[in-house]
Amino acid sequence: MLPRLYVSGGTCRMPSSPSRERLSVVIGGHVDHGKSTLVGRLLADSNALPEGKLEQVRALCERTGRPFEYAFLLDALKDERSQGITIDTARVFFTAPRRDYLLLDAPGHVEFVRNLVTGAARADAALLVIDAQEGVRDNSRRHGYLIGLLGIRQLAVVINKLDLVEYSEACFHELAGEYTRFLAGIGLTPRQVIPASAREGVNLIGPSDRIPWYHGPTVLDALDGFAPNRPPAEAPFRMPVQDVYKFTGDGDDRRIVAGSIESGTLRRGDELVFYPSGKRARVRTLEAYPGPAPELLAAGAAAGFTLEEQLYLTRGELATRAGEPRPAVSTRLRVGLFWLGARPLITGRDYLLKLGTARVPVRVESIQRSLDAASLTTRSPADNVLRHEIAECVLELGRPLASDTVALSPGTARFVIVDEQEIAGGGLVHEALADPRLPVREKVLLRNYKWETSFIPAELRSERYRQQPTLVLITGPRETDRKHLAKALEARLFEAGHVVYYIGMANVLYGVDADLAREAANRAEHLRRLAEVANLLLDAGVILVVSAAELEHDDLELIRTAAPPDRVLTVWLSGSGAEGTQNVDLTLEAGAPLDQQLERLRALLVARGALRDVS
Ligand code: GTP
Ligand code: MG
Image (tube, rainbow, N blue to C red; front, top):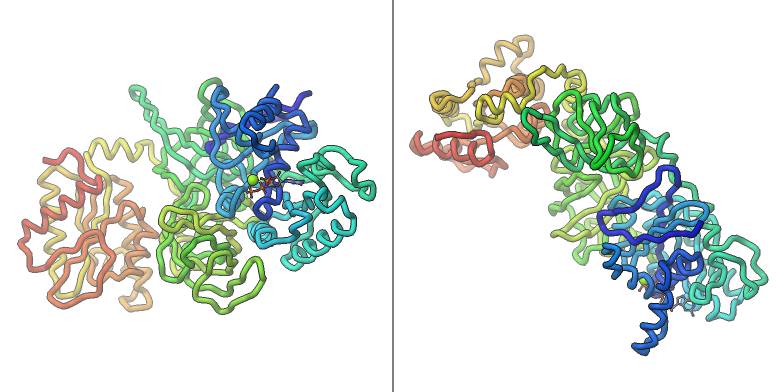
């Protein structure tokens, strides 16, 4: 069989044949050490190039008076518009006799991290290329470190450009020894260290008499020797939810949950649990466009499915299968990360963390230590992480996030950090730590898991009532008259035909909470129960107006943990005194005219999509 070649785009239109094994290998190493040459030559020598491509590129070089480079092949393939090919970073798919490969040729750190962490193809293994003449350089060490940091345990080292040192065995052994010692220091053991000359095609796919002293594997042998991380079928099912699509047919209210399967398999009838919400439903159908629904979808596949019970799901949830090891859900993570940003990573600043399809605001809570990935000098304790440093940190997330450990599912253990729209770092979750909301969240996960879904989907209720269920929490200092405002809002919405209900704290305290003393130690439980009551009424489609004195940040977070967070609006009714700035959706002045306050509340509800069709 002749190998075939594809260069795929950022959205990975990679052909995948279920019967062929596929392995992703990221190529790393210092600038100009020959990574692209190695990939280009590997393709050329294994007959993986399209007919005539090599001659075409050679001819072009001759015409333009440039010396021919194998690396040009990759660029030339990028321009294969006729085949509908476009690429961002070099992702080269090729079919070798043993299996299919996706080679990720990373020109720089950011691309290297992106290749390791994001996209449809995550690396199973790494090939690190070192120039025999230049020797081990900063990026050789940094890329080695990154591989270890991100939990990739399979790697091979290529000592390249041996032609420049007259194929010296001594030179090869010296470099192999130096780099292997460095890797050992960071806990990595390469499977092989392979002598080669990419440009001369020495020892890439076959043995060469230029290095008679060497009897080990070729570069292709090394690739063939890597094992896929874990046979996908054995791994627990993980699918980050990309989107939820609506069927638009008459009377057809189905929703397709779509995403790319990270690990495991999916069948009709499987019972799924989505995290961080903990919601549960059975798979009704697997969907495919075009064509018949598949029986089974496995890791790597783009999946679409409908559910027996209609759940309210959003992008960023992680689909898992009931009965399998579950991901951790937390707002605090202990991580190892690598910083690439020109500005140092500092505590207290806002960043964005991307893991799977989730995008979550993040801050660094603490930095245990940081270390220069090239020189291995350590700073501890550190209050920032400089470019090219590795750090052990605790991250604090703005919202709960579902994550795994690398042993369970590498794809949902690796993340990147974005600073002002740019990827500025990447890392691996070591451990999800307990956060203050953990006890409440565990109750909520169980409640959602056990939840009995009625025949009436939330959307039907929402259409009938012309509103989105919403909890309006009106809080503020003790002296303000929150109750009056809350009751007036209820009355105004009721008049306008809405399904609305007012709850004062006393209604809960002396009823649902009758068994709980009114003391500080019980505050969290009081709030949890209030949020549980709210959750029931929200599920019934109601707009709920609650007044409560002096709810603080932690109280609001607790309520957002037990009640659906995207359905909670917070309003601060400020008194005469100076109060600390509250992170709320709306602040009103206690002294302002009631009509004006009500108008602003209504405008907020409209802006947040809670009220439809209101006059
Ligand atoms: P960046 O993508 O810029 O980091 O570089 P790279 O690692 O992809 O290196 P590339 O393949 O572009 O090669 C850099 C230069 O080294 C080119 O001029 C190659 O021709 C040359 N080169 C690569 N491999 C060999 C080799 O085995 N022997 C010799 N003599 N030159 C080589
Ligand atoms: Mg290159």
